[in-house]
Length: 356
Length: 178
Image (cartoon, rainbow over the protein chains, first blue to last red):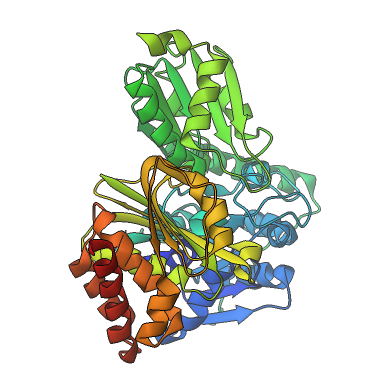
């Protein structure tokens, strides 16, 4: 299979092309710009269209329009651009539209900076816009996963008729790593009986969520709730790294997720039984991953690039049965593998183990 | 086995390209690798740096606190990155543009007048490749053959650049062997 060396953001573009996506609407913003740049160059050869909208609000609503026809569609942005898209995302979730949104998380709040961050965790997994909805959120940690998860994002979006968000950062986006261009997995059978695009010879269809009748409103909410529960049941994904005999766990995703793997190996060399749970789906949060560990593990550290957001979901998943601590860097800074281990040793008083 | 390499200099000295040569050499050798540019404001003039990690097994953390090797093409890059080399590591310094002070004695420092050598070849902008030549015998996972293949690949669109770059690498290798 073909192996290429590309930047993380470019690989998202390549995966979109190979997923059969032919429509991209966006507005460039650093550090996500290589996605639209790559697609601008390569999409036309495949019959695809890249349209730079007047702004992010325009772009997300173009995605809404395209998705109502059953076409695969993607947008990408960052920080303030993702904030601007929230209204459109809420509408898209309500209309149950499959689409893929890439958020190359820059540090915030406000205009913030360009460095890697995970400050948009809450925004991504708790809804983000108004109303009560969920996006499926995938968190890649290396270039190959940017490729694989982008492909999967389109299938998940179609399968559940729901927007899927890929949460990445500029460090992953700018780094070049070898990627195997795997063939697209067999696309799921998709029910297109809800799409619009000409109703000659059939009943009119309307793709919208508006209702002034509370009874209808509640029925809609219950339907969406049932769908979200179904997704929570079926789509939790995570990776475990040296968890079999772990006495302590790191929990981390994306860029810090892979840094933590080095921490785990360093800890094991020192005789500390450390493992890692790396959530792949941030929503649905992989609660199931913690079931075998929550009565066994002595302590957990979540490693995040924010003031502590995912830690809330981890505490719920382990029912606060053991201490759950936070190690974090912010503002675009990244932790090294060593400082994470120093924190763990200090927090759980593990220096004695070291001398064994 | 792993080579963590930092490359730094002024914008325009071909720092990113230097990294790409190493990265493509790693691709040719079917290694795991990361090419990590500094991005943001540093892209707009001033010092530029990038790092390359080459490995024969999966690369987990790609945040380099201490590198196995570095090439610094000017004095500000030397000042910034000399402390970031592991004890026992290798530092190639373009001595045409960096006169050293506070020299560490726990790392191998190769001072090479790369800009002068590049000027002798007739192209001041290939000082980066002269330094690469000086570093190459000190890397664990790529060799001249791999680098030549990478250079072929990277100069496909401008084949006239191939010979000068390869000459520069050779001069760098000869300098450290002499």
